[in-house]
Length: 123
Length: 130
Image (tube, rainbow over all chains, first blue to last red):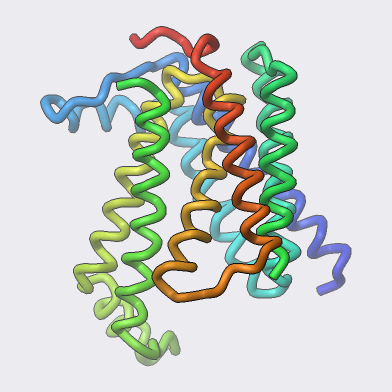
């Protein structure tokens, strides 16, 4: 497989993971739950029968399987820091779809976290 | 329960699930995934208590995560997941006696600073509990 194609697959997979989180958030936002041992089963049914949560979980599972395929072909120290792009994509999507107020402090935190993940991937 | 506790618990479950899976699969030794032995290998893997416990922790962590999402903003909750990177790195230094390089220690420190900054400034944007 060409390295360009692999990079494209990696980026698409990262995007898939972010989209999954947005779908999960959408489902849970319109269908909030309280956790308790009493009635846990009913709560679980309520959670996972929501179409957004169901679809989000499915996409998340697919992106994980694709990820396993990717790291069998790409060095983990390259692939791993790329995944922290998720933090930026998720923040942008939250702003667009949920009108969340992503403060400057929140962007700074995301920047610090990405820097940390990149450093962590150096051996 | 406040969203931050649900998120922390969810991360704890994922990290310990990961360690249990690793331990369970290590105990099983070399696994033969060729088509002739696939079904017996899968039976071996999925009847191993440590593997099942690990998978149960993964499932529980996703329920905790979803519950957290029903009340916290996504742009607040999602970056907190990076605590998992720091935790797994620190745990492997301790459990597997890996000697951490200064770059890695710096990486963990910076992640934790970012996470603390986020967590300490996130409370007021949290949505009310249902």
